[in-house]
Image (cartoon, rainbow, N blue to C red; front, side, top):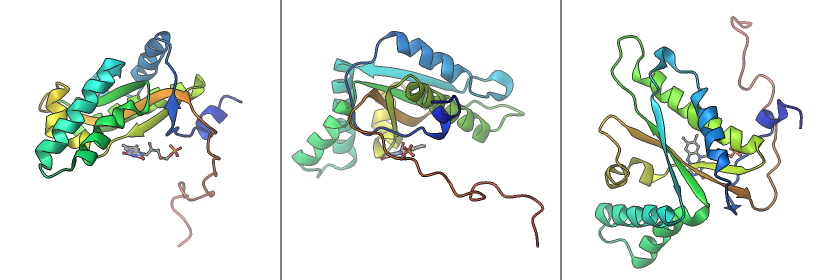
Amino acid sequence: MESLDWITQRVSSPRLTGDIPSGILSLLEAAAARAPDHAQLRPFRSLVISGDGLTCLGDLFAQALVSRQPDATATEVEKIRRKPLRAPLIVVGIASPVEHAKVPEVEQLLSAGIALQNMSQAMFTLGYGAMWRTGAMAYDETVKSGLGLLDNEHIIGFLYLGEIEGKLKTVHPAATGSLMQDWPGNQ
Ligand SMILES: Cc1cc2nc3c(=O)[nH]c(=O)nc-3n(C[C@H](O)[C@H](O)[C@H](O)COP(=O)(O)O)c2cc1C
């Protein structure tokens, strides 16, 4: 692929398998560190979860579901417990915005989002798969406190990572002008 194709052809991979070599983690960290960051506040951190940690995360999801929905069926609890087992590795992306006179929270959340996307993009470029997921568990207080988030922090995504299982989906390019318009345009 040409270098720009790695961006224009990026797709998510919902089906992930295999192992991630540990050396890849430092590349992901380097990619995240190059997110634009107004005033260098570093409003992003992440947790790397694999192996038994994925089982612990599933237990935390199950605990969260039972506490928010005490009438959840055993099937529903088991289903959510198994969610983190869909990939060999999960990076939990965390936004850590702080009060700042010149950098509003929205800018810091964007910076954190770009950092996580840089990780996803880096994985694709390295020939691996990634899938950014959130869902109710990303916004759940039991999950947030179980993962050690501070009051000002948000889970912005569970980035599921692994070897790509199956075929990549076909990319349909955006119609010209659907995302960019000239301004001022013709009235
Ligand atoms: C903040 C955020 C949260 C997302 N949460 C989910 C999710 O919980 N479940 C899901 O299937 N896709 C979720 N997605 C979308 C997928 O990651 C993916 O982008 C989408 O399936 C389109 O695939 P593509 O990236 O190949 O275009 C989320 C994306 C973002 C940016």
